[in-house]
Image 1 (tube, rainbow, N blue to C red):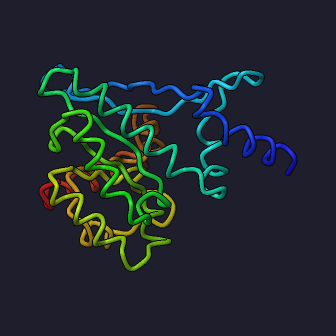
Image 2 (image 1 turned 45 degrees about the vertical axis):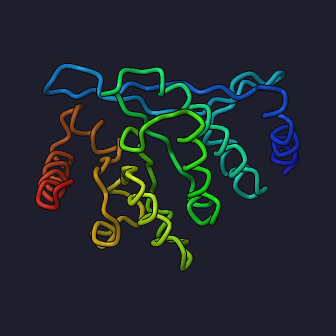
Length: 209
């Protein structure tokens, strides 16, 4: 509890002190042998503790009501960076379920695109099933509004937790990201993982995702 209290207190000054950075993980188009885009990954370089992983501080930021401010900074900063990339390279940004619930998300997206000059079709938001587990009445409208702006949506970590095929009917996703546990299992030769991967790929193809 004391550690959580310290992290929350330090999070409140991290943006002001410029302790956050963004790493860009390449997204490969395997069949073409080229990089199609980059996923923006938030990093926190704490002055005393060094790098603190998102899995440790993001849940605290959500509970403390700080994730929207941090998320807006990530979106604005990443869009400005992506605007300098070649026009056929897109940007993927992760959204917290708390961000999706906020009515301000749409205006934040519009503001970040306008500020950076990045075309909406070069921006992709990644969400997880937690959006549906805690969704309010406005969640579906928010996702539809983002799609209407030209922004793509991807369903992340699919296949674990409370994953339901019903989620694929609720929102017009352009992508399904198979959970890493299956991908790692397939790479390690786990025979149980391969049929699951194949089933998800077949489902996605049939839905035009």
